[in-house]
Image 1: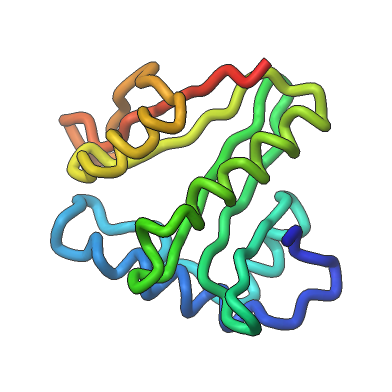
Image 2: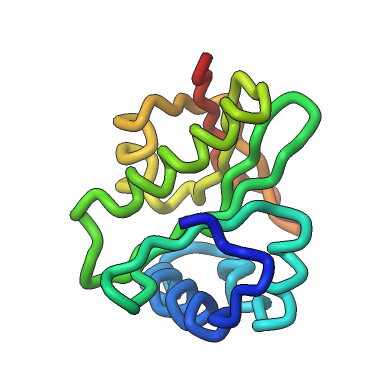
Amino acid sequence: MQIPADFGRWGDVLALIMHAFALMDGIIDPPSSAHLLTVEALRAKALRETGFVALDGDRIVGCVFALERVEDLYVGKLAVAPDRQGQGIGRRLMQAAEDLARSRGKADIELETRIELTANHATFARLGFHETERTAHQGYDRPTSITMRKTIS
């Protein structure tokens, strides 16, 4: 479901992201920017981006945000509740982002994933993404992120 303008469950979305991204703690360096999120930051993010949530009854079990750029759609903060991973929730959220991109006339979707998260690289490759570059976070002299892109048209 696309997050409506009057969405009142940002605390639940934040809790989901923090729980899902906690699995990366101690694995990725630098730490995830998810640690900087607040309810207010998510509200502001939703004003600039389109958010989607996956629900199981009343429980939020997944989310993703999509930022429309001139030439493509950038997807970020994909999170699925750890106890629900492997059930197609992330795939459905990414499909919602693809559908949004098509509706906005975008031919490509781009995302970034951390170097250390090799399972994520494989998952995104299965979804049709391919690596386009490796970049380093500020202050790092080695690649820390992989940019991946998918052509959808």
